[in-house]
Structures are given as structure tokens and as C-alpha cells.
Amino acid sequence: MIALALAATCSKTAQPSSTPTPTPTATPAPEHKGVKNPGLQSQVDKILPLFTTMPKVEAYVVDEPIEKTGSEIEKGVAYTTCSPSKIPVLYIKKSFFGRANQQQLRNILKHELTHAWFCTQGVQTGHDARFRAKFKEVGGFGN
Image (cartoon, rainbow, N blue to C red):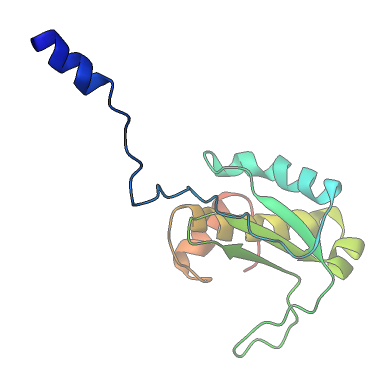
């Protein structure tokens, strides 16, 4: 009798649920403006070990004005963005990249990678004392 009850229970077909199972959606990768440049990426990759555990930072060349804000009137030559998931992306102005000497380029990349490092730490910083200390630590000069 027990065997018949088990057989009857096991042979029932599962009824479809009235609530559909949600399909996982992939988060689309952010679109980056600018152009990947192997030479620029190579320079960034060479400097990256100065920041020990920081993951790879993608770098793009952009052909756009980079305006500084506030009281600074100098046009910017590079900037770094930081996503909510702490993934930095570096952008460098095409006209600067095309004319900068190696020392200038390395210093700007160290500057932007310092911003990127703080991004990966989840720390918001401008050019305060913490920023200047880290920038100097990796061999950067100036502000």
C-alpha cells in the first residue's frame, strides 16, 4: 500500500508555476568615449606596478576639450572617471598625447593613476594632502 502511494506521488507531473522565473540580465559594459591606443595603454601598464595591487586601468585617447573647473583657467590634458563599482578609466587629450615628451606623459599618467588608485580604494579625493602624498610616493612631481 505504501509503495502504491509513493508510486502515485512520484508519477504526478509538476504543474508550471504561475510566477515566471526571472531571467538574469547581464549588466552592459559601459561605453567609453575615445579610442584605445596600444602605445598609451602600454605606457599605463608600465607605470601600474607602482600602485602594487591596483588592477589594470583602461586608457583612451579623446579628441575633445577638457575644461578644468573652478578658478583654474588652464585647459586640462587628462582626466580619470570612477564608476560606482570602483573601476577607473583614464582619458588623455589627443593633442597632448601627440606632442608630450616622455617625461611629461609619464608624469600625467602617474597623476591620473593616482586618481585611479583612490577610486579603487573607494576614496573621493581631489588634489588634497592625501593625493599629493601618494602622487609623490609613485614619483610624480608638480600637482
